[in-house]
Length: 335
Image (cartoon, rainbow, N blue to C red; front, side):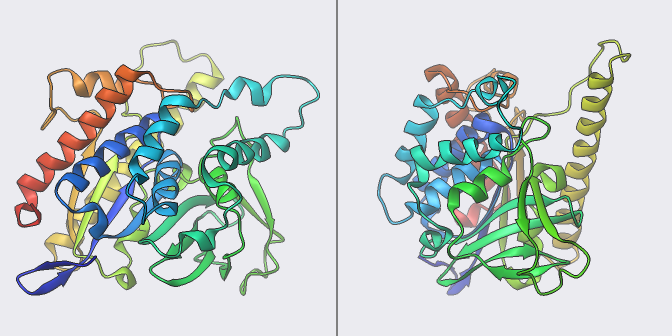
């Protein structure tokens, strides 16, 4: 359903960040807020990372269903992927953890469906990181177009028969808990230097999913960026531990990427070269429905555990409130 303003068709993109089940529930609230204003079914493009891919793929698969948001809500309230069960036991092969993750998604959400089943909804990017090339790797379907997968260096290959569960698992395979998904590279037109495609969590490259939204060929007028990732926080723990130093380094790197992507969106819009951006983070207090929602929501862990009724209530309420506030402030013509 197209969005028409003053007789002109406008296109909207929604980016949904990584951040485990917490981010997925926050994005659910954002989509609930968009639905209340009649905008959800007018979304033209979804760009999803990790926890955002869980949310985006679930909703896109059921795009024509009236209860598509309720299906995601039920999953987040009732399911838990215990990471400890994937890594326990000396005889559990490292490589099998990712397949177990994919099987879990398939059993509860995707039911043996392949990417071709996403073809009737909006254009959707499920984003991973290709360790072999250092690029964003995407699985993309929708708008009645062919499904493809690939990256800037490799080119693209047909993906209509690729399982949704494996694409979402690759997008959410946060290291080092889950190993990368390894695929043969010989089906890609420019794979002359690599033998395998090696895919890990999309958040390693861009945890917000902004990259596909700023490509000229997607021709968007508005971009909504729902950032449910872990906000950077001061850490006063001793730095002798290698694990603490590594985590701090990764957090700083991701914070820098977040800032650069935000600056890029702003620059492109202000220079007349890009769509109008509306970006909000889970720790934002500007527009929160109830005092304390931002602090409560951003303190929830970014793992894959079942969310409590209180956590679901706050996360969804907060997401809906923030998207409402940003639309009212920066794009009132959409309301």
